[in-house]
Image: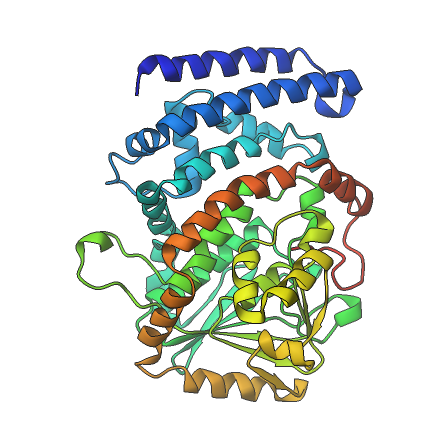
Length: 436
């Protein structure tokens, strides 16, 4: 890479930052100032995209010591900010954004989306990054001895317990109907890692806890999707949540774990089978999760929905997976029009494997865990998953998702909906804090 290319990018972005600094903060700008800021951002993003079209692989190789150092996406993008000034936002810029509500931000995470699109478009670099994201987290490695010894851990939003060879993960975001946020995503990845790393675990189970919400008190809820109240407040991270969730624990559920030095080994770890138990509803990100589970059990009164298009965002890898399971027509009705699917309806059978009386959920979960704990299940489900979704297809999808989702996160229609509808704490109705 010619050093003058990086220097030219840094100088251009620095000049743009000076023009932005001369403007009022985003909420105080008049229409002309908004247009001026948009022009600055557009010029800087054009420069970044052009630089990455030429040098993305060189940048990634430098940041990873020529593909010998695995780095998770948060670490990678922060290193890029230091090594290549102007390429992505700095820690200080992101910290300033984090202090603002979503509608008051500059939208600097879009610049991270440009970066990750370029990296993931490269087959070699993208594969290396996906492998890095499937390595066990440091937190899980540190907690593994305790989990092996006790068989249970309270991770805050998620609790994990090993029973008869099954790791039971229970979501405990009761105050918001198990809506997803940054903290829940981090806890989920730790729990998934522990289940994958513990040799005594043969199968994983995910279920929602019993709710304290007045409308659902005493009932379990699987998931209400993304917490839109947190999104309004500016506390939903593009890297740690929207991208990290897909490349982290959901990828580990589907593609299996990576191991340090795995490229030098002779056998890929097969992963483990996973069961989802859906009580009441699986909305948005909750429904997305069902698409990577090997066996889905739903109560007869449960329903599924994926309302991301109505909220203005992209439902993770749901667009990649739902059509394969349910067919293209139904996928379009669900994703583009927000169609709700009842578990007991014929369409529900395309999403779940068993529909049982709500009173029989516990027994159904235990029976499924016993069926899927056989030694040949894990390698066979790995081969099924490879046939259904090759790793390269996932990489190519995530490259485009990285930028599209970052753009949607700051699109005018999304900010308007977030500002009008979710400025107050969650409402007492299903889906009130949720989207895809």
